[in-house]
Image 1 (cartoon, protein in one colour):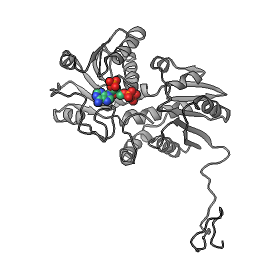
Image 2 (cartoon, protein in one colour):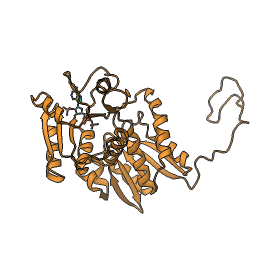
Image 3 (cartoon, protein in one colour):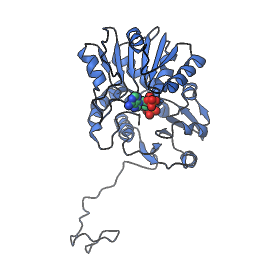
Image 4 (cartoon, protein in one colour):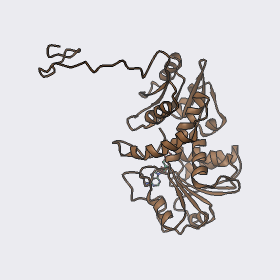
Amino acid sequence: MDGKTADGKMTGGKTMDYTGMEIVNLITGKTKLLGVIGNPLSHSISPQLHNTVSRGLGIDAVYVPFLVEKGDLGAAVRGLKAINIVGFNITIPYKNEVVRYIDEVSREAALVGAVNTVKNVNGKLYGYNTDIPGFIRSFKEESGMDDLRGKRVALLGAGGAARAIAVGLAFEGISRLYIINRTRGKAADIAELINGNISPVAEYHGTSDTKIEEVLTKSDIIINATSVGMYPDVNKTPLDFPFSFLPRQVLYDVIYNPGKTRFLEEGEKQGIKVVNGLGMLIYQGIMAYEIWMGIKVPDEITRRLFEFFPGLPCREGFYGRNFH
Ligand code: ATR
């Protein structure tokens, strides 16, 4: 090739050897398209997650990241519909804004005000929030507590993750939800959403309220849905006072990097059941895939993802929380 590659660049005088070139059959004219829209996306593990599932199941589909600039969301969604995408995820910062471009939004997603999964059926877009059932499935399967009816839950945090978790727990029939957040007003908003639309089980507190220890003691489940303790701030804890957990209590942390936050380490030291957020990440993805393909992903595939994915958080720019 005369020291030049196809695009005309010099190759340092070496002749390129193309004898190993092969036909790539990975994507064909029949391959189904899936993807995720968000910004940034470089941290996202969703392409690996979904492409691993497709490969595992032998389904001819490819999942691609679509970086969308602010102001282009509507055009991006219309474009995806126009090219007949099968379905897509939405992540930061568009989970709320995308709702206005969806034709039909599920009741849970409408309550949370956030859609993370869209299915395109003959040009009509259906919106779902799989963070909600993703959390519930992860919690039940990994904590061993599979009936949440009558449980009292302390929820630390009042951001997007907390909102999805609160809605999921309320639909499961918990008897009390104590929402505790640094910014009290945000906890109040979620309490109002739950009490006004699902069941009157929620109360809210600021993190420095004197009643915090009392409500934690009453709780069967304590969930960290804040970002406190996430990599690289691994020495921080969402409860900044010494607290003795009770043997019946289960701790859940939405963070999965580190795999065990100080909050979970403390619970484990005190001998109680602890669960990290890797399951929520994996199940929200599995449930999106099930919606797109209309299938049940076999448990064996899910089990393999739990084996593979703890290795990925070492990647540069990986968040360790927030799903996609
Ligand atoms: P997401 O949508 O992923 O849940 P978010 O909306 O940024 O993310 O929410 C982050 C949560 O972590 C919030 O509850 C936030 O508390 P505020 O509502 O007061 O901001 C909480 N959080 C983040 N950093 C915190 C800190 N240093 N101390 C206490 N809470 C913190």
